[in-house]
Image 1 (cartoon, helix red, strand yellow):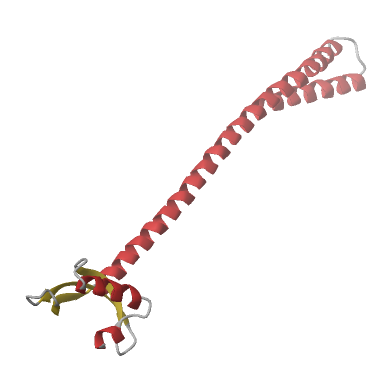
Image 2 (cartoon, helix red, strand yellow):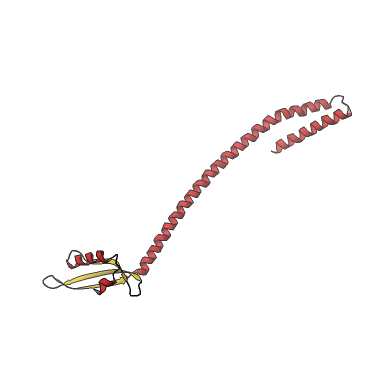
Length: 169
């Protein structure tokens, strides 16, 4: 009765069944259960017991050992929690890596598209710009008034500057 009063309420039915089975000779009494100490603290106990019997086969007493495995169980729970946390972090890391790889592929595609766009635009701008520069050069080779020459030189200088900018880009 004293032992039963110390059992954790959630373990009473299971332990009583296991103990009864041991008394009936169905199986040995090797189990674990929780007890509640007088101060209210719950402790985990592992037990191994042998039922001694009289010559008629009736149980006379139970001899066994109880081990307080509370610290071991708490450490096991901490290890399991740490493992679960590590698994969650690994999943997050895998997700982040997948996202980074996807973004890298998208960035590479964007870089390729940008390069192709710049090459196409450069070609499209150079064609008429070369005509402007060439025609201004031809114009400068003719008889022009001072004002006309300044205008043609401005066209030529601006065209050369724009061509240099396109080359840099």
